[in-house]
Amino acid sequence: EESLAAIAEMPKLELHLHHEGAAPPSFIRGLAKEKGLNLDGVFRSDGSYAFSGFEHFLSVYEAATTVLKTPEDYHRLTVALLEESASNGVIYTESFLSPDFCGGGDLGAWREYLAAIREAAELCERDIGITLRGIVTCVRHFGPDKAKKAARCAAETAGDFITGYGMGGDENRGSLKDFAYSFDMAREAGLQLTVHAGEWRGPREVAEAVDDLRVSRIGHGVRAAEDPALMDRLAENGICLEVCPGSNVALGVYHRLEAHPIETLRDRGVPITVSTDDPPFFHTTMRDEYVSLARTFGWQAEDFARLNATALAHAFCDEVTRDAIA
Ligand code: ADE
Ligand code: ZN
Image (cartoon, rainbow, N blue to C red; front, side, top):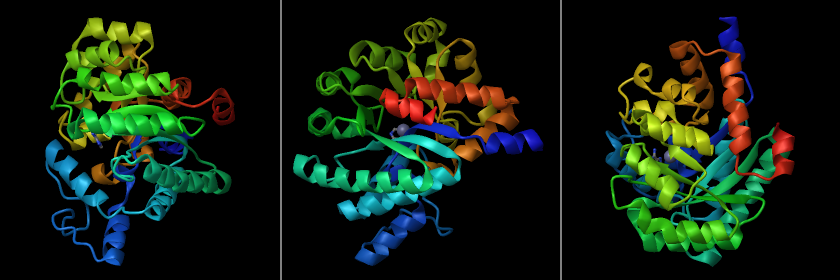
């Protein structure tokens, strides 16, 4: 249908993409082969990533990252993921970069990985017209001490490219309060903040993200839809949700897209955006996300234009960049 094709081709902004999680299986397999590394259990016989359930997903994700060993590997990964995003109509993306995977939290090593990623991003901006900004991200199940190291890496490299600090990983472990020190350090360095919350745990976790970590955006946050008063708070305070519908369905947060609360959140006034999270893991792309939302909820071009306007308003970038992508 004509309007669906037009929606699929719209320029798109994405705020929630994990750098390693955007690595195609063929890319990871190729690196493993070059380096003679074994990746037992990471792939199915059809070549896709093999996992069932969230914890298994996290362990397969971490196993795949073990082949990413040098700044040059991250340079190649960055070009590959930006080419894929651009081919889906993405003009601006923010990716989660983890010092834990890029040098193990060592600041000197982190600077080298970051330089390689930036160089690749600048090439892609010039040649294929996609802009990248980086959110330094700690991993919740690695614990608060590693999060502090990541926050130090973030604070030391904050600027026009590293614009945010965040946390992913296993939401079912530990308490957000344990990470307040890291988020305070990042805020004091001028970084904007986001945290994965309300993907697995309920609305209280989302409230804690706002109260204890003082974030301006939340990764997923979809379970806020179970608490109308919390939705009103998010709406009043302009806290933006990075909603990843395909990820939620692939990991079983909701059994199918029809059951996803994205419209409940939006219609209550919560600022919502749409992203892919880890596209090759979840067999999705930004184009697929748009088409699925249009098919399932009957969304029209104006609904997607509104998503993009929200993403632009909440993007972790400076005003010059915002004007350039508007
Ligand atoms: N890391 C990569 N994808 C993630 C997700 N969906 N939730 C938490 N941590 C992640
Ligand atoms: Zn995520």
